Length: 320
Ligand SMILES: NC(=O)C1=CN([C@@H]2O[C@H](COP(=O)(O)OP(=O)(O)OC[C@H]3O[C@@H](n4cnc5c(N)ncnc54)[C@H](OP(=O)(O)O)[C@@H]3O)[C@@H](O)[C@H]2O)C=CC1
Ligand SMILES: O=C[C@H](O)[C@@H](O)[C@@H](O)[C@H](O)C(=O)O
Image: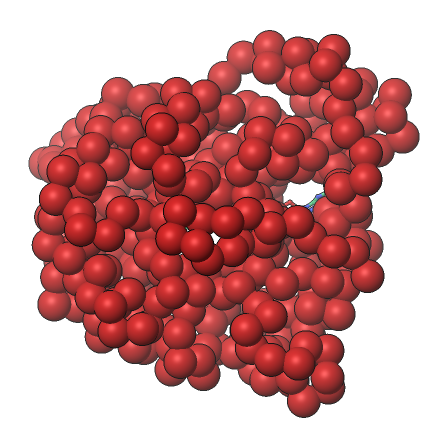
């Protein structure tokens, strides 16, 4: 069984540097086999699980954890690092604590290790889903939503709190009033979207980055095939006797961030864990740094002629 290195967050809590993504699109489509997949992941040595209210994976993750305890795969819940996320429809001050309480009841846990604002956009509707109306889109009131996130930590419902898909500008807004600093910003990061500037800013502020879609999210509505079809990565993989997925994951890991990768296939779940006892050469790293940059996940469903975000540049504060 592989042992996954950990990183100590600025609040002293530790996060395993490789985590298991639980988002399978369409959400809810694999619920019959999901629990077994999560249990198998625990058997293989995954300890960090990345969930979200919108993924419909919380309940099955909760059941898998329960089974893992009963089977003796883990001795206590504390051996796991569980992340979940606040969906946009709950991105309002008074909906945050009830939302984490619902998440905890789905997971059958007393606390999550990390609770994140999923996307810095709010929706008027109370429903968790992607089929919202354009007129429901609102800019998030970051100050009041973050205050409620801080309450989640103060109440012991989350050991750490953080954000996801936050640009530098939105982090600056948040930091200007935050009493508890975000421990993590979970963002897209892979050889096609290396996030150099955001990483530099977050490092300065002590905010740990978790990379999502490290393989480009191949096969999802938000992802692309760019990584898995990349010639530069293909060549490096061939020369090293590794797979493209392993090269991409190793590159992300070598940047000093944590990474969450999703595979529900037993062989690939094992393959993705095998990235710790070898490394990329300076020449290989340089070739990857030279890959022209393009962002895969653009969240175009939040763009509307009526606003608040009329263009991608407005939504992403000029970063794309
Ligand atoms: N905060 C946010 O907004 C976001 C967070 N996330 C989180 O990050 C996780 C990972 O990102 P995600 O977008 O799912 O994409 P990934 O980059 O992890 O890619 C997942 C896809 O790659 C396939 N795959 C996995 N491993 C391999 C391999 N070794 N070889 C070939 N194909 C492989 C998977 O298929 P298969 O299962 O068949 O192996 C799946 O189709 C998510 O599950 C979620 O938890 C993701 C997007 C946005
Ligand atoms: O976490 C995964 C993704 O963020 C996903 O939940 C959203 O990206 C959603 O598909 C969207 O397009 O807004």
